[in-house]
Image (tube, rainbow, N blue to C red):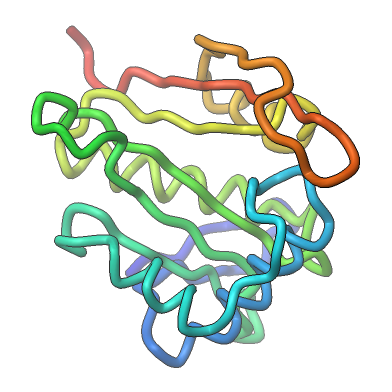
Length: 178
């Protein structure tokens, strides 16, 4: 699909996710579930649940699920473009999400993934990209700021993770010049 330079200057490859990637996608996602602070899921997901999530991105040419391979060919991140809302009038708006393996963070993989997702959203004709991020997730907020997103909403105490309430922040980026 595409090769990009990550922050540490190692070549990475971003490509469509395949069935063989489901275990890596599940493992990376479950790291986020267990750590808390970047997903509202409270219980690790099964391989079948992650398969259903990947399969929900239809049609795939409009709503891709991709993986990022490091220079050694290991899947160290994944991302997607998802429907913002099921009603047709929202079809110009897309939600992006991305997760990076906890052992591969701070190497530019998140930046490469978000850049790919934004390019993909533009090439598919979306008008606006959105992201939903826990307000305490400073890394993802810094990434949104890096790409010029603006925070357009804030929902205090939106999620309870079993021990604490977490605030949600809503981000948007216009993708087309009006």
